Length: 354
Image 1 (cartoon, rainbow, N blue to C red):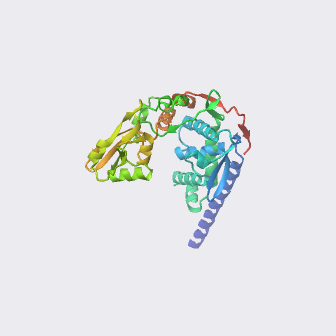
Image 2: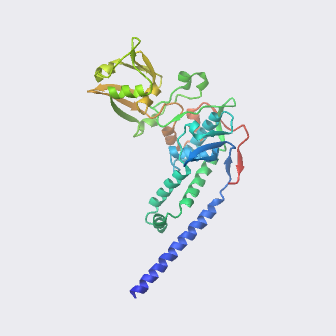
Image 3: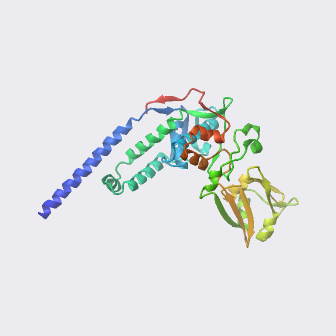
């Protein structure tokens, strides 16, 4: 009797497993033919597992999006950032039809990384379901999960209808950052008339973020070493100055951080006779923003920063909050860029069966 029960249990397990496999295959097949999605005719070359993968720009946009957010983010945020990424890529291409992803400088997830991430999330979500148990045991459904979630993501992106941001027919450089210090920076004030489309916008929602403030401590030798590694040497009276033996208090007295823009970001820092761009200074020292205050405490300099990033253009955090309260992607973009939202005038956007 016991032997029969074991035999029956084995048959039942095999039947369930076979059913899952068949179901998974059916799902995979059903997702091979996706709905029509935009294709741009612009190619992005990605270095991928010691080889080069080439994909259309519209297929690359989701990979960039997923490096900055997840596919469960508000739809209007996804759409707004899709327009920004599309505009940025075309701006960098300068009329050419292809570009290396490395030259864009945009973070992105490879298809393999995204497939692993989404499948891990799916396994966790379905942990107590038969499909979840099968997934953990046999890695079933990885392709199906990727296909389904990518399809839904592309459907959201397609709602932007291939639109970009332009002024008088010219693409803008749509800068963006993670969190402002409470106000985005004026492109006209800091970069010149050509960048006047980068608006100075109040972003009170950013100040509510848990990541809004940060503090980093560094010793004087650590600061000087980081600067020197980036070919910045402190000079005084025309001569190289060795400040490594200075106390934190004395070194702090040398720093002039009073040159701020109207949005509260440091434009440049004077250290001795050396003038260092605020963004460069923050990047070199690994600080989250050049909107900062400094103080000397015991043997260290404390950097208190507000926000994350350079502060120009769209704040992704504020855009997220705007989308959550129901603002459209058009309104979100208008809040940060003084530019027209138009379909790509090159006429290269088209619908293709994938």
